[in-house]
Length: 83
Image 1 (cartoon, rainbow, N blue to C red):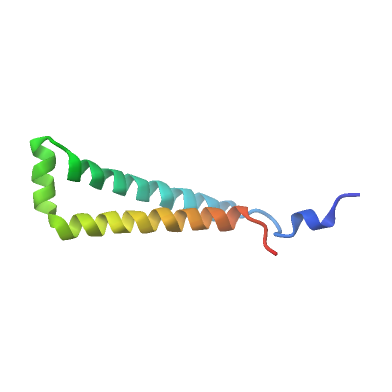
Image 2: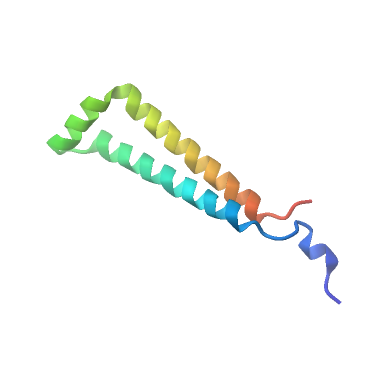
């Protein structure tokens, strides 16, 4: 007989997991792009940094971090069992 308590959380939620992965990867791309712009040594990257300004680069990096954390939270909630 199967253990009835092993599937307490019900069925997995693949859509939530997919959206979590998309959000986390998008956030990772944003943060990586801002790090490349902020620490790049080519003239094009320095020009992009000055065009964006300090406020925009900080805002874009913050949005990227929120997307990473939100995506990881969605992944966590999609894969964990509910109690």
